[in-house]
Structure formats: structure tokens, C-alpha cells
Amino acid sequence: MPYKSKKELPDSVKDNLPAHAQEIYKEAFNSAWNQYDTPQERRGDSSREETAHKVAWSAVKKEYKKANGRWVKKKD
Image 1 (cartoon, rainbow, N blue to C red):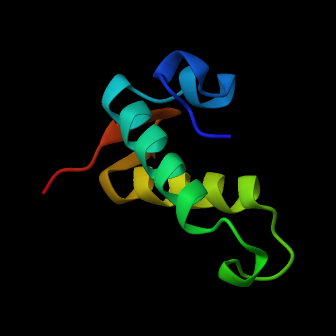
Image 2: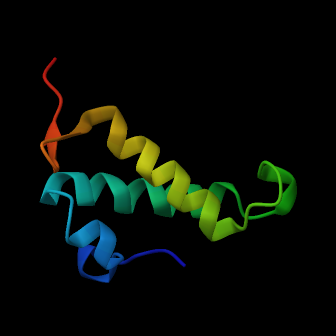
């Protein structure tokens, strides 16, 4: 279900991503949750929640990368 605040994000997100990346994750998840509400909108047999998490991680990876075990903002 959609997240109202960063505090509600899964521990795997809160414990690893910087604050800005958490915000990106939350917004992307919530948007995907609304966009992919019916099975016809999703690929394969992924659930609505699985799809939203995949989209959220993809959005984070556009601006952040993992370096030396930590998520850091990509340089332009």
C-alpha cells in the first residue's frame, strides 16, 4: 500500500538509502501503486506491490549508485 511518510518505508530502504533517495523511492512507489492497479497494467504475474517496489528501485537507481557498500548520488 502507498507510503504516507519515509518512516513507513521498509527497513531495507530506510537503513540503506540517503534521505533524498528515500523520498524518490516513496514517490515512485506511490505513483506506480496507482498506475499499475490492475493486472493488465503489469508485466507477467507480478503483484501490484512487487511492481511498485521494482519501479521505486529503478527510480532510485537513475540518480543513485552503490559504491563501497553505500548508496551515493551519481555525478552528472
